[in-house]
Image (cartoon, rainbow, N blue to C red; front, side, top):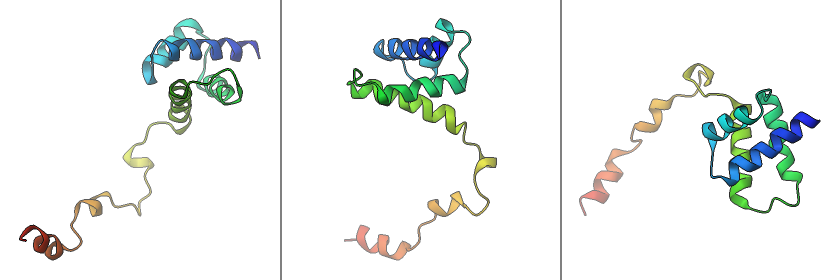
Length: 103
């Protein structure tokens, strides 16, 4: 558990410096070269249990990093086939919008 504690300290230190996302992860890896995504996620989850961490911004930054690491990158291949992203761009009823814009 010592490695996770060190990563936890590096996360808190980086977040208090104003680092976030890739910059925060780079800081953690610089301080703790043995940091893996799994250990960073474990260390980030400790922030939710630490009563001394009261700054909402720090909690948001660290938890967002953990969520991004856990979720991984979102690619088109990862989306379900039933999800049609082009449907959101099509106007379902152009006559209604046309009547509002002409008034």
